[in-house]
Length: 146
Image (cartoon, rainbow, N blue to C red; front, side, top):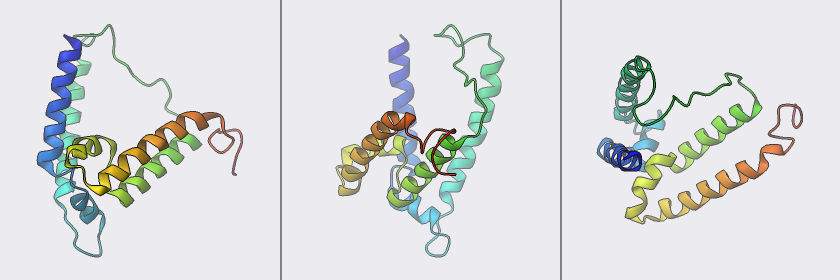
């Protein structure tokens, strides 16, 4: 049942990404192009997502536990460290250059556009390198660049 509900949630989320235009890199890049053909509609999509997320969390925290799990999976750390900042910067650069973030990239895969066929393998390579590089001095908070 949990897998089925996860699949259904993913399909609804993907449909929302497609309907909102988030799977269209041109829409994303136009949102980021403040000096050119700026398209503010993506800001409304993000604002709506923030409101829905806020309300959803308020409802979820009223429950003792999730319906299909023993407890909520909540991060234990609130530290802002070098790996977090580096990861956020890389995510933002990738989003700004490619016009995709990971979720919409997967929903755009059936289009088989050259952009998505380049972005997805590079995203997967970056995820793999990031997982392998966790112990590299650049990524650790005790070593690397100062």
